[in-house]
Image 1: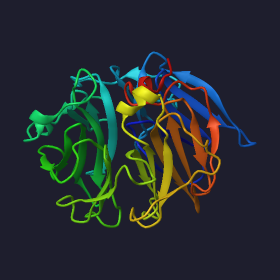
Image 2 (image 1 turned 180 degrees about the horizontal axis):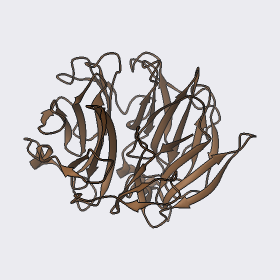
Image 3 (image 1 turned 45 degrees about the horizontal axis):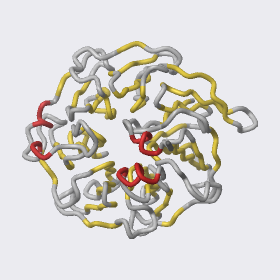
Length: 357
């Protein structure tokens, strides 16, 4: 069994037993980590070393694993990530930022988001891709941008209503949050929050309850995205710049968030993100840091997080721009560094702001 940890790929896995293999998307390819019988992890192999991997996807009903790359298109592997082939017919943008899958009509549909912010789908496991132009027919598009040159927005995150695969939410960084009720053929802008939107999660037992992280904190909607409550900001101890967000599928009120102290503009001066991990047991109403086993100061930013649910337990992993992978087997109460020395696990050039001169 294997799962994957990447910035723009899947964040939730359900398995019959704990996986002993972790595929990590890094600046220099896919790092395949393996756990031995004693519980120690080692770097077993590195593949696609010339590509900065943004997203890794392991959809159901196929042996294929997909890897999206910044300026490197989409590749697929049929042997657990050991070898890859390009699988991007019809993909007219090769700077892939995010990937997602959803089961619909008895099959599996893959989605890919890019920079510039476009959206594509495939119904044949990447054999061909079709653009969904509706994402670029919204009123907010003249305001789409990004702070760093060349100031081009990207499709940061793609998620779905667990009760209805036709309802999807797409974040554009920076540009806002878009909602579709027809499987991505048309979109509308949601409003009521800062336009630097990072991640979105829909509560699996209440589709009107939506969680969002962004450049000025965390927001929650209880009415399907019509209105939003600004739950955390820079004054909160979870960190003022939250990004990664996962929830437990069987206990969905339990959530984990990874956040930096402040936005990347501050990192360029201090070369320090001051990242933190926090847990909520009440669907985001309150948060507590979980830091036992973590360094007092995480210099890097947390840019990938995933949770694997198996049996009566679960594991959670996160990766940093410093090339570290941390794991907890007890709900975040205790953490251990299972790997260090990897190349950055990073969105685009975020890691550059954290590199000391």
